[in-house]
Image (cartoon, rainbow, N blue to C red; front, side, top):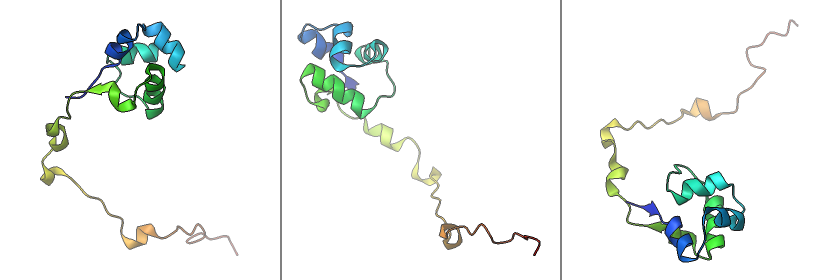
Length: 102
């Protein structure tokens, strides 16, 4: 499983959450969530700021291996593919079907 290792990298450099927050110009609460690996969503811009503050590559912020079982969470037969019909792809004419009284 892939995990963030921001805390480890920061501590190697003698940084705490507050100093990493200042260096990365991110909110303390954001860095706190990344530090404790409790963040469930974060942007690439956020990761880039943390990586720059730690003087590492963004890929260095992660350890572990991807979990291939996550790719197959539902059987292929359960997947639904929706494709637009040719009529649905034409631009909508807003004047069609309207009676302007003339």
